[in-house]
Length: 478
Image (cartoon, rainbow, N blue to C red; front, side):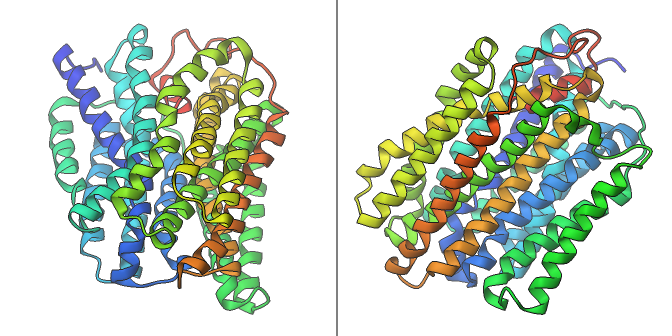
């Protein structure tokens, strides 16, 4: 099917970019609102973390399925379903009467986001000829960085100026506008009708969910309690069953042959621990600054900027340098810088330093992350054949979101074992060892990244590129 006319192409970019910013923003917008949510709805840090984890977990497990459904049923049709789901869930989050209901609708939001992100990118690539897709898709990397930087700031500003409910209400008019606009401006397209790997989807979703639930409940229920042991054991069994199934599935959700390339494996593992470190650090630091330091939600968001806004400046430079030096020379020192920045903040939290002391370690951690963000996906995708780019990108993006979920769960366990939300003193007592875990994850990522090898782009990736292949390049550069 032919793409839309030129004015409609510009509208396609505007509509899908707006929706993508919305779902990227919502991954972190809730972080600076958590203390206000805690005051209104209650809940321990173990329970509050699910307002972020439920979103990320549903987001992670839905990406590959959403892409397959779009190929089979029509990308625009499924994309509009995702917009409707996300918008309705946002309104339900705003109206949630208790924390359990809020978490449930955050998961539904994540499912909508899992549809919007990959299919929005696919619709853009379908609307533009191959020679123009690179410049158009370059917009998406900037949107991702802007969403990460703006999340804590927008969440804090809206919470302080209005109410935490409005961090969800603001999605409703945007979602409605994007839904109606997509009906007018977006052209329908289809892809190869690949069979859905339903057993794999069930096994991996259930396995990860049950395992993380066991981690979260462990401190409260006791690590030796039957419920905790059964949850952790069941999670491990389900994940092992997933990998066993994938070795014999006729059309596997994640072809295990991808992991025969050592550089792809290293990129996937490094991605997991890197996003575990960054999301857990943002999550912890928001609680530390607000509940421990007494800063307002907006003040907290502003104080994040030396850290979270750095990728907007440094990441494009790192992306250009990547072509000349490869990933390892950027990722290894970048993650060491992030680990050093986090460790420095741990020291400052111990001596009760004022905010000015945090600016330099925030910048150091942000520059390190900025060196890593554009390099990891490029290294991973360059390591696989062109025919495998779609699945490879799905794996890398899933690893990002699962890493974020896992990281938040782990640091929450450490926080609860050493402190609580009862007072600034107990918050600092839990924050220091928990952030040290985030520093350790960064250092572990640097160690794994030593296995990254410099590779060129897969042959054939640039010729006759299909929309799905261009989608991969765009996702990889987020």
